[in-house]
Length: 156
Image (cartoon, rainbow, N blue to C red; front, side, top):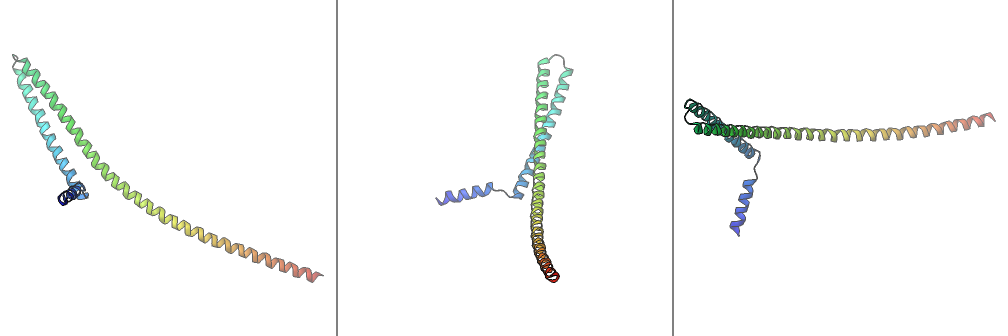
């Protein structure tokens, strides 16, 4: 039981790659892709040479057709590998774009939080000023009422 549990922990730890591990895996895939493309390009050149060599001998058309098919297959493999490499490169740039987008979103979130707090403080200060104005109007109306009441008493 202990062996199974420890093996499971080791295998899970192997699947959990950090940023450095992902970088090394991506770099390894890119090197492998470049190597495959070099080999495919060499195969295209080799098949071109073999096709060219068979064009000079006119007695064996079967061999000529065979090299034509091989050349077309080598070109197909080369194009496929270049497309695969382009997809890898696009994926890597998307990952960089995603990390940049994540940083931008974090900055926006922080800015929104600070703006929200600032707006909240302004609203509170405006409420306090409105309360103060209300009290001032109340005091003013009381003073006016008292003044008018005293004037009426003075005129009688």
